[in-house]
Length: 214
Image (cartoon, rainbow, N blue to C red):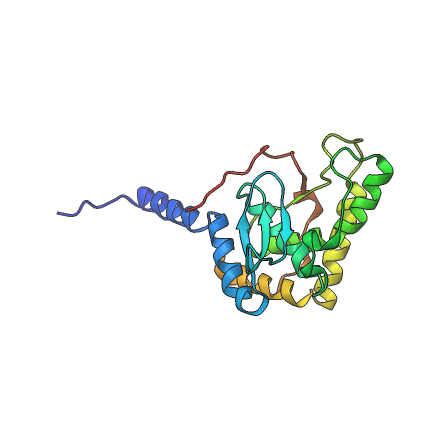
């Protein structure tokens, strides 16, 4: 004989199932990215170690690799955002041909770094909204000179507003649509979904994401 659950426990079970459905698993991103882009761009999203990197195809690997750090969901979205901005020539170069001054930058070096991070982080934020996930703006300079990230946040927000009004880069727009479909988020995105008071700095939350690979 089946046991009848009280309405209270039915609601708990429903909420639990809803949470399981909304878990952000890096393996889902790998699958979604490959389904969307592999055939056209010969590119895969790959879980890596400490440092993210973009690796073009070579004699050891027949496809391009977007390598993200430690299986972190946010790292994967950030690296995909960089890939969405890179042109065809840059996608044939390791790390798209860019070199960044590493963590430990001076205030002047940090200002240059933030200028080139505005567009990728605006796209990453849009990915997060489409995936129903919180967004952390990243100054990525934990051992360098501490600075006020308020202007950087505002610049990223302004870039989001520009993209919403004028259109995202084509691959970014395509992946926003894929994420929104998978995570059941309504489109089009609107500026009301991007509020500065909900944006945190890197390391303001947990030092590490919970890595879910199921």
